[in-house]
Image 1 (tube, rainbow, N blue to C red):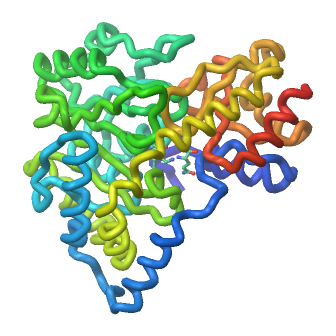
Image 2: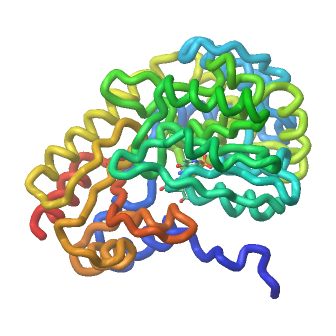
Length: 378
Ligand code: PMP
Ligand code: GLN
C-alpha cells in the first residue's frame, strides 16, 4: 500500500523498551517513571467512576477541569486565560500537537523545526502537507541561534515548533530566547507551537519561560501540556492546549473529529487534584534530586554529561568509547552491557550522529544506581 509516511518506522521508544525487556536490561530509554502515581489521585478516579461520571465528556473538556487549569496557570506562571475559549483537553500532548498542526498547516506551508526534535512533530507536519524546515541546535551546548532561525524564514513559513524544557537535550529556553523569537514573530507574522510538557521539571532555581506569559508571543502561540508528565501517569494520555480563541476554535474542530472528547472520570479527578497546588509544586526538587543522584553515580564513568536543566532526561557523550554510530552504541549497551538508552540521531531527520545517548532518570533510585554501576564498569 502506498505509504503517506514512507520514512517512518516503529518509534525508537517502542524499539528500545522492547529490546530492554528482551535482553533483561535496565530500561533508562523510554521516558516514563517506574514508580507509582499518587494514591489520592487513583482514589479520586474510582470515586468519580462510582459517582457515575462514565459517559462522554464535553468536547472541549469537563468545565471543572478547564477551571482548575486556568487557576493553575494563574498560580504557577501568572497567566490569565479565558478557560471557556482558550483551553482544550486532548488525548495527551500528542493529540494537542497533532490537532494544532492540522488546524494551522496547509499544503505547501513551511514549518520550522529545531533539531534534535521530539519525534511526533515532523510526521504531523508532513501528513498535513507541510514542509518541515530543519534547523540544528548549536553543539555542544544545544542552544538555538535565532539569527539562523530568522534566516530560514520565507514567504511560506507558517509556524515554528519549540520545546522547553527540551526533550531530548534537557536544555531550557531563557527569557532572551523568547524575546528573540518574539522579534521574529513580530517581523514575519508566523505562529508558535510551544511544547511545554515538562513545565514542572526544571532545575537549579530556573523559571519556566512559557510563551503564554510573553506579551509579544501570547497572541500567536499555542502551548501544549501533559498530565502524563505532571502526575507521573504517562499511560493516562490526557493533555491540553492553550491558545487564543480564534486558534482554539480551529484546534477544537480537529479535536472534535479526531477523538471528540477524552476520559471523563480522569478529567474530574484531575480537576479536584489540581485544586491543591502541593500536588504539582515541588516536582522540580524531586527530579533535581534524581538528576543529581544519577550524575553522582555516573561520576566515575567515562561518559561525559551535558548537565540537564529540565525534563527527566540526561544526555551523555560517549566519545571516550570511540566513534561507533549512536544507534549501534545504544544496541550494544542494551544487549551486551545491560542498560537501555535512546540514541540522539533519531531526533534528526538526516540521522546526524553526534555521539550522544539520552538516559531517563525519572526512575527509582535503585534502578538509577544499578544502571550507573553497570555503566561505570565499561
Ligand atoms: N512532547 C514531548 C517533548 C514529550 O516528551 C512527550 C512525551 N514523551 C510528549 C510531547 C507527548 O506527551 P503525551 O504522552 O501526553 O502525549
Ligand atoms: N516521550 C517519551 C520519551 O521521550 C516517550 C513517548 C512514547 O513512547 N511515544 O521517551
